[in-house]
Length: 272
Image (tube, rainbow, N blue to C red; front, side, top):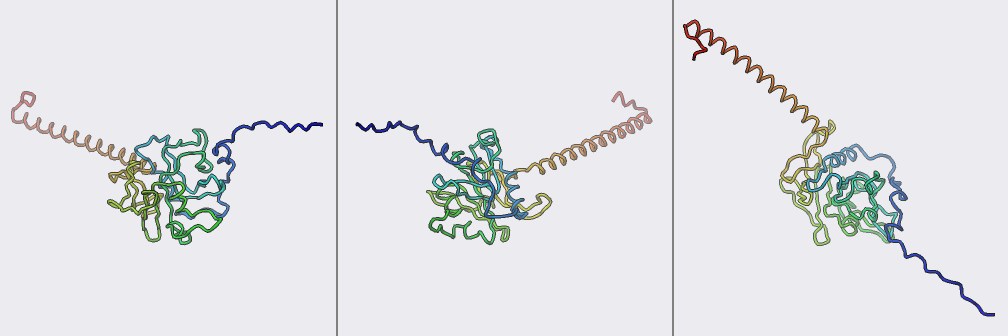
């Protein structure tokens, strides 16, 4: 009796990572390590950044930014993520694949990594945010290591509302180098924007805020400011029209009085 080996059929070629790994629909979008909502500043400051992030060199349809969203970054450890206080991306569709709101930002699906990340210092996260802690064995890398070495995010910004200190780092030669403020702002010519501190009122709260400017230093308005500006401009236009009408009426009265005086002197004002 002869033995016949089983037939072996060639399987399909392996799927590429972005098709084989979990997608944003499979991965958790909440942060199970931190219960509850962030404090008020951690809500308002990222909101102001979100509203004023309008890169002038990019179409609005190719700009995305988010606050407190899971950022998945490692093909070998697909459940590892960071959760930046705010990050901005250019060159990616506003909607995921042009059709859906994002649950998380999954870099192996998106292909484009964030261009700028902002972390708001808290007493418990300061060392990690500033790169003063190192990864322990079998643990996920720190924020600094992810932003600098894995995702290679060009600009990393750290702001403390406790000291009003703004620190920024630019990726140069594969490593973060400190940036100097120019006219109290951090220029990012690739975006046509600069990031700086602004003393003003946002959502009724007056303090020092981090927000976006043009490269020339003009504020990028958020919608509420645009509405106020439009209302103020309309009011100013109405005031100018009223003043012009008053001046025209006064000019007519003066002309009538002058004509009457000339007639009293025997001069026909129509012949002058």
